[in-house]
Image 1 (tube, helix red, strand yellow):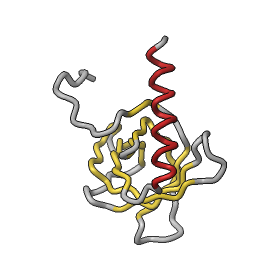
Image 2 (cartoon, one colour; image 1 turned 90 degrees about the vertical axis):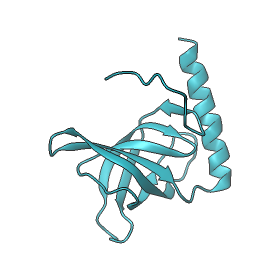
Image 3 (spheres, helix red, strand yellow; image 1 turned 135 degrees about the vertical axis):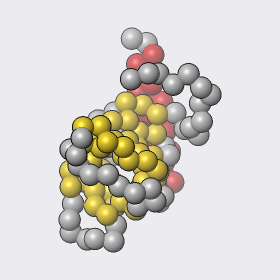
Image 4 (tube, helix red, strand yellow; image 1 turned 120 degrees about the vertical axis):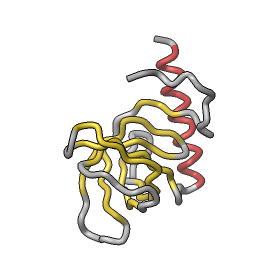
Length: 121
């Protein structure tokens, strides 16, 4: 995989981080799948999924982050979903649409700490 050499277009820095996520298409209650994040920012995250999602699909997600006690329930809008392993694994990029402001701040602090930790290695 080639490293992107162009100008950074992201609004928020992202950090590689693995958290368990349960998700479902928002319109279909009760049919959750499990996944894991690959990276996260204050604007969204990248997860692996077992199917391709159309851009604009709304996913209801429940995530447990290590810096808060409770599970966080948020909605993500699919920005991109591409096949990684034919018919099996997809990388799905999501933009947060309803991240609570207080959690947004806590997530920013956590990401900053992760990035500082990795830059010292």
